[in-house]
Image (cartoon, rainbow, N blue to C red; front, side):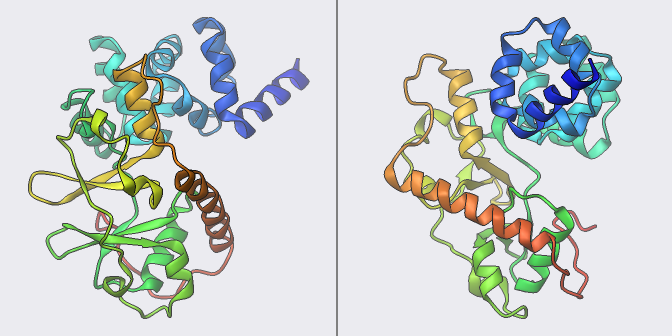
Amino acid sequence: MIEALQLTTQFIVQQPEAAARVMEETPSTEVALLLSELSARQVAPMIAMMFPGAAARRLSAMSTAKAAAILIELDGRSGAAILRICSNETRRVLLELLPARRVRHFNRALAYTQDTVGAWIDYDVPALAADNTAGDALQLLHRRAEAKDVQVFALSSSRGYAGIVPVTALLQSPAETPLSRLADRSIRALTDSMNVDGLITLDDWDQCNLLPVIGPDGSLLGGLSRAGLRRALNTVFPNLPAAEPDSLLAHLFTAYLRAGSELVRLLLGSNPPARPVEDSDGH
C-alpha cells in the first residue's frame, strides 16, 4: 500500500497533465481520498491541469481545509476558474479560509464573465518599475523561485505596462542596466475586457508565452498564458477544434521556453545579487 502511494505520488508530481487526465476519469470520492494523503504543493500542479468542473467536484469532496490549502497553491487563474463552478456555499466557505490577498485576486477574476480575458488572468507575475536594473530583476526571480518565470514585466511610474524583458536578456546584460533599456515594447498588451475567442491567431503568441493584460486605466493586472487561453477556449467553446495558437514559430517558442526554464533553474541555484529590491506588491 505504501509503495503504491509512493508510485502514485511520483506520477502526480512528475507527470501532472497525464495524472490530471486519469483523475478526471476516476470517481470524485476516490480522488479526494487519495489526494488527501498528499500535500497541497504536490497535487496543485495536477489540479491546475484539470478541467475546472472536474477539479471543482474533486475539491468539493475533500475537507474544506484541504481544498483551501490546494487553492492557495494554485495560480489565480486556475483557482478562480474552479471557484466559479463551485456552489455558492462552498465558494463562500473556501474564500473565508484563504489569505486576504488571494481572496482579492479571486474576487476580481470572478467579477468577469468566462468569455473575457479578465476571467483567466494570472495575477502572480514578476513585475518591476522600468528604472530598476537587470540585477534587481534577477533577484526578484531568485526570491520567487518559479521555474515558469522566463520574463519580467517592466512598469511605468504609474504601474502601466512598459514592455517585457526575457530572462535571457537579464542574464546577458550588466547588472546595472536599467530595465527600460532591455524592455521589448513590441508585445502588445491585452485588455481585460477582450473576448478570448479573438486571441487564437495573435502573432504575439509566437514570441511570448505570457501576454500582458491591462485594466481600463492602463495599469498592468497580470498576464494571460498560452495554457490559460487554451483552458478558456476549452471552457467557453468545448467543441472548438483548435483551442490553442498553433504554428511553427509557436512550436519553436515552446522549445525556447523550456530552455528558458532551465536557465531559471540554474539562476535559482546561484547566488542572488546583493542589492535588495521591492517586488511588484511593494514587499
